[in-house]
Image (cartoon, rainbow, N blue to C red):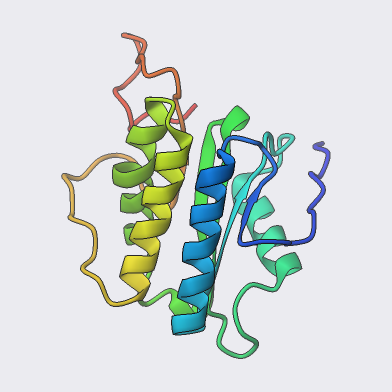
Length: 178
């Protein structure tokens, strides 16, 4: 049985509990998220947490989303971007009111194409910034991320190999799940 990771109250849109974001990146991300909320009414939050303590990222994301009450009541227009670097997992949790615009497939592409390459090179600031930029662009009517060749991965949750080195006996990134 796992220990449930404690959920802290949402203080600012970019909550860096795992301390992987620089203060400058955290400030820029927070400003971008606050601006997006003023312009659209959609609420986006970023949470970095060191570990999920063996809880699934899906369950933890749902608990955080519910505890923080993301999105406007009756509109369910919230988005949670969660990164757990020690567990090598991240997820984009989308409220029902935005699922038609920010689908699971689009969330997967944002994680794979915008965030993961930066994380693999150790650049968490840029990875989170690019993920947030892609989410905001899509919610503000921007083009959806380019499709990619089919792979065995699906959904909007991924495990990460942050070493940047794929072991030869394992499938290439992002096909493997650690």
